Image (cartoon, rainbow, N blue to C red; front, side, top):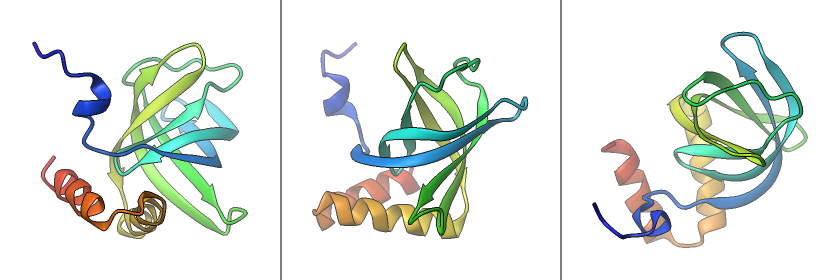
Length: 126
């Protein structure tokens, strides 16, 4: 077991990104206009929605709304983090258009092209 803090082990930078997302469970649970806390190439963290019923590893469709919902990043994800204030989703599938938009969003906010390439390499090899 290592003593390395999780932030140092993290392979994907989290980008603080105030936005809105719609979250729909495979079981039918729906949460509209959720507050996004941050994003990465591998997932998204949102503020815990009112009435949240989900549990760890539950499957959801996550729609990240950009540009007043003119652009939507679609991903299929599972709950990877859950606490009293937030829900973290691990992206399990994302279409080509959505990953292209997400990559561009991360690229613009990272400001470090070398770091972006390392993260893309880690994403491809994960």
